[in-house]
Image 1 (cartoon, rainbow, N blue to C red):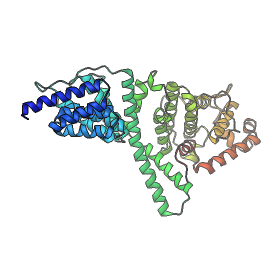
Image 2: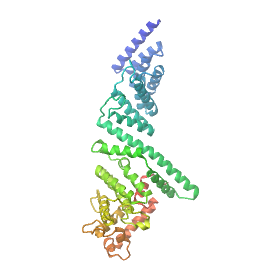
Image 3: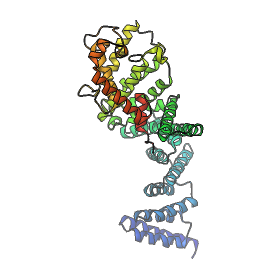
Image 4: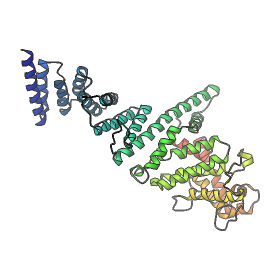
Length: 448
């Protein structure tokens, strides 16, 4: 058969394949493509149509094989790569999907500004970019995925792909903001886990430690990692929280994502010896409450532990001289007494946030029990309660002063005994003593 006759016959088979696909008959379409390939096994169109027919019939393996063969014939055309991305995604082959989408974006970039090149609609390029970011993210390639989400957000500014403005939908914009933040958090989480594992392994080589002790060492190392500067992470999370305020971003509260800045502030406080870090914790906790409300009941528990850490760091319940804290409050505070009252009010507001009833020292959660004791002492004239005098003293002074009548009235011996039991229970179960560290330990996998 002559070359012209072969080409004509191949086209006839491809027409039949197209009509069969349109009629919803994938087997007939595959048969027609097979006939075309029998005449020309390097027919790009026949290989692409063969992939479409196999995909329509549910044979993802055959579809991927046909698309790969087509891409091998002509790698600079998007049709085969589009089909491969679709089939690979359906098959759960994230690596193949990411590869195909990367090639599509490369084809689009190569066509930019080339005279005579077929232009690719910017809307399609944006779709490829979004899908590429999602595929990379699902593959755990956090750095690459984060960069791709950044390109998606650039489209919203009209300065991507030849500065052609494409308006992002609210859903796409939120997905990009959330994706960039999630990638930064996940990348940092991998590094934190590595630091924790290294610390636990080092502890095991130096002494005989129990699984619970190894668990505590790992959690402490992970928290120490969280105190390290990470502008990429914090900028991504702040962008997500600020630009997503009031929209889809807050529809579902995610403690890990929405509470990331507060968690890092608590980590810095744990590693610091200055009151400024404690004030940062209060700032982040108040910002979280302002933006997310009660977060479906999750926010109060998060801010309660953080507020107690801040109270300790600000000497609002612990002795500064004994704990090594330095008095470094901002110059805006006119006096130490006034700053204490103001800060105690802020702590009390956070401890009370989202609670329908006054917390009880009888609560099984030791963090709640401590919060209840702190609020009880504060409400008895040692800081923030009704009728409390400015600079009347810290709650810790009332609690620790031997023979204090105010302490006995605010926290009777029976309640004090219950509180001590709760603290002992908390120490035994977590292996750590601070509220935020206990919360972190509770979130981490339990020791075997």
